Image 1 (cartoon, helix red, strand yellow):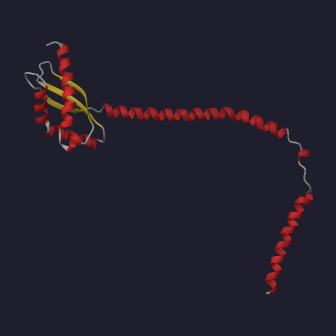
Image 2 (cartoon, rainbow, N blue to C red):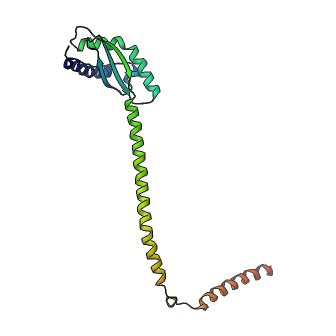
Image 3 (cartoon, one colour):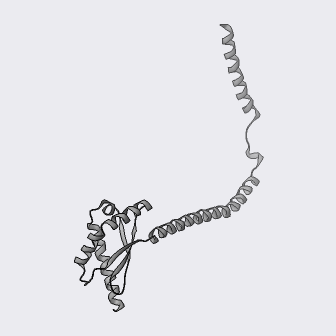
Length: 176
């Protein structure tokens, strides 16, 4: 059999399987997002490996695997009705971890890019810091003592007023 026919049958099975899976009433299957990632039929079309992925945890994937196993007869009969094949292939569902691995890699890349952005910002601030330090030193050199225009009486006057208030409060308590 020509390889292009096998590829076409693989595509037809994948398309039909996505429709069939949407129509299954089993809550283990209907409540989850199941994606057929690859279909691999043998040359004589007697058996077919269906690779699928599930969005969710490992427990969810185990429940979906059990649901697919229980619905195997229904799925195969629906596939026979939809495809014009002399023999409907035996189906084997295989869980595909590639989506989960891809999501983990994406998380790692996102984390690394955030760390790089933080490091770039820190480097930028460190590069600006010597320039700011030079401006600060320059400002301190421009400081003149003549700019300070205040008298010592300003400080002593406030201190004397505070002392008078404390002595008034102490006299009232002794009179009683």
